[in-house]
Length: 164
Image 1 (cartoon, rainbow, N blue to C red):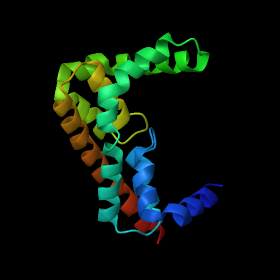
Image 2: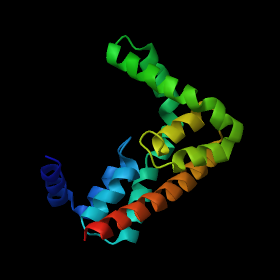
Image 3: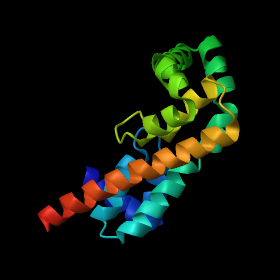
């Protein structure tokens, strides 16, 4: 199934765009986009660049609109939206104290950890909730994404080399 989805995306938008768009998807982000690009056999540095750009594209939108969106969801009468908004608030609040303590570097390190739900989307959410200045939050996320990208790229290239 994964192969058929991958083939469809590669044929419909091309491998490079597939990496770029995959990096924009929450939870997957560049942690999934980089191995995908390496799996396609693309140049690792181009994959890295596309994944970082794709992962960072939603960050300004998240920083500007996430608080209003979450508040709207949490107040919604629609059960799914209410649960979703409450989940996001809990997730952000769970890590708030640790990240507030370290501010800029806290968000950067949080985003740099290459695990699901620690990427630019969640980092932007936390930065917005702790009311970090926009430019600081964006720069912190960018540095974290770049660090995570290097880690994921090294692992992906290493694993690909083991199997080739």
